[in-house]
Amino acid sequence: MAILQLDRGVAKVALIMMCVVFFMEYKPKAENADRVPSAFAQKVAEYQGNGTKTLICPPYYDLTLAYHLDPELYIADCEPGEFKRTFDDRMKAMGILALWNAGQVDWRELEQAPEILFMDAHSEFTLIGNGIMDSLNVHFSQKEELLRQHDFDLYRFSH
Image (tube, rainbow, N blue to C red; front, side, top):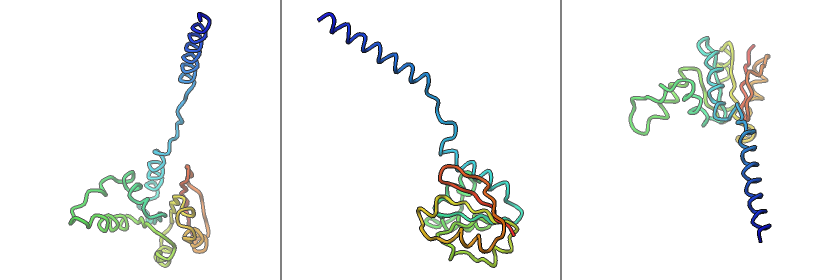
């Protein structure tokens, strides 16, 4: 009986020691997914202001980007139920277009822009066959990957 109690005591000590070692060795990952939108917003902000247009697909990522790009976009003097339309108008004025597919793009207007940024939030997985990347490759000759984190990519296209 005494041996069983000793074994249980040793087992408890061993378990506690293993937990202590585990917690001492644990190092949280420095680059968490919650920091991704902020990094993309910073990169988009670098290119804003010279006529650059930014395309976002899928379109429901626009609210997240806007939050990190300019939280003032969320302040709108508008009628209830009109926020999204007002928000979209403000984003468009900044040259940011949220798209479901390539059919929504006025390519003649985009070809006038000096550069196009395309924020691809894993769109080929969520919106299969959206055609945005293929159309950008047809309309613009130069492509550069600016940023890639997790399932998000940011490309720069130019003439």
